[in-house]
Amino acid sequence: MNILLIGGGGREHALAWKISQSPQLSQLYIAPGNPGTAQCGTNIDIKTSDFEALGQFALQRKVDIVVVGPEDPLANGIVDYFASIDELQQIPLIGPSQGGARLESSKDFAKSFMMKYGVPTARYATFGKNEVEQGFAFLSKLKAPYVLKADGLAAGKGVIISENLDEAKTTLNEMLQGKFGKASSKVVIEEYLEGIEVSVFVLTDGTTYKLLPEAKDYKRIDDGDEGPNTGGMGAVSPVPFADKEFMQKVCTRIIEPTLAGLNSEEIPYKGFIFFGLMNCSGEPYVIEYNVRMGDPETEAVMTRLNADLIDLFKGVALGKLHECSCEISPLTAVTVVAVSGGYPGEYESGKIVKTNLILDNSSQLFHAGTKIDAEGKLVTAGGRVFALTALANSIDEAQTKAYQALEQISFDGKYYRHDIGNDLKCQNCRNQEPRQLRRLE
Ligand code: AMP
Ligand code: GLY
Image 1 (cartoon, rainbow, N blue to C red):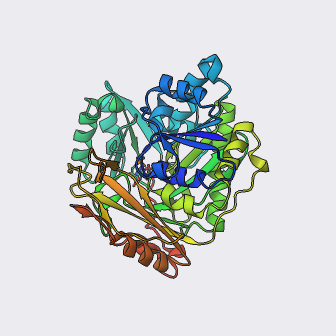
Image 2 (cartoon, rainbow, N blue to C red):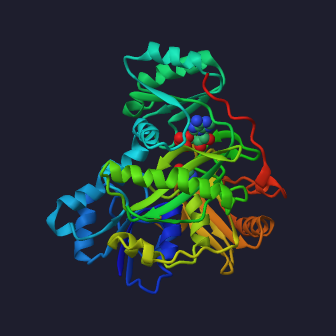
């Protein structure tokens, strides 16, 4: 099988690493990839937005399956583009059409979809440019904190949570006036959910689905969940509180109604769905849908997947996912992300990376933001630079291995959190009780 993987971050390195282990693989191409993916296949210098060049490449190299890593090409219709060109129609893509991608690209669409199909989520209302007063009135009915979300894609920055009503009103006004450009021409205001977050992933052929390992993401920049939000500073899988009972609720109340809803709406969906969930006193609620895998969750999840990923992709493409096996390792994966100093604000790039890392089979160094410079040296080229994943028998063991390995890598300004997984180590964190869920009055 020839596979073309689209994207070039840590998630794509983890996917490329897993795909490259399949005995069914002939050629793996990654567009554009990074120095890490170059160890798993051949990087191709084509932008993720250049659908025409990607299509031509897929034809010339007889690509059997295209796997789409990030959300942008999906939201911009790469699947629809391939379907619209005669010669490309036969090439299956892993990822939904533009219609399906609206689950991520429009929060308003996602919320009304959840309401329509009975998927538990925070109650909400959506306001447009000319509805500022109505938005203020709605905010006044809520209790703090106030959650405001730009309707469209805003590079993970479009959610603002405010403790103060006046501040929330000002934020609403700013968002509707274009704080996030077109993405905030509509704003979703929703009830605040108190609880613990967990990321749940499935792969679906539109009819059946396979549950992939769940993970917990660490979004804030500093230890103790302090500081601004980032793309993700680490991940742990499995998540102790996502036990059998909780996951059963997730399947029957969330995953299955979502797939049934997509079918009712006649939205064919072949690809990953990432359910961003809040565990509110043992009850799962959807915070957001994503139509792709998470980053850095993928760097943890892929190391626990014992199945042949190409086999699963073939199952998706042929609508025979139910015939595939999806074995998951009982081991624990801890992923720690090393970022450039200053991130998620401004940071410098082009810092030389030095490493004397020797990893055994149970640890992986995934490249997220690196490149080879004009002199052939490995340098930093992004906010999130590396994700180091260690697999072991416990969180403690995996954590120790991951942090020891990360110390063997150096670059100017290297920064990482020191507490990834700490909150999940307590004996009875399964019973960790989030404060009472507050409801709208
Ligand atoms: P989103 O981009 O929708 O995942 O939101 C970004 C982050 O904001 C989430 O990861 C949560 O930490 C937080 N968040 C979003 N919606 C809510 C909500 N309704 N209640 C509490 N926290 C939320
Ligand atoms: N780690 C969260 C995301 O990928 O959206």
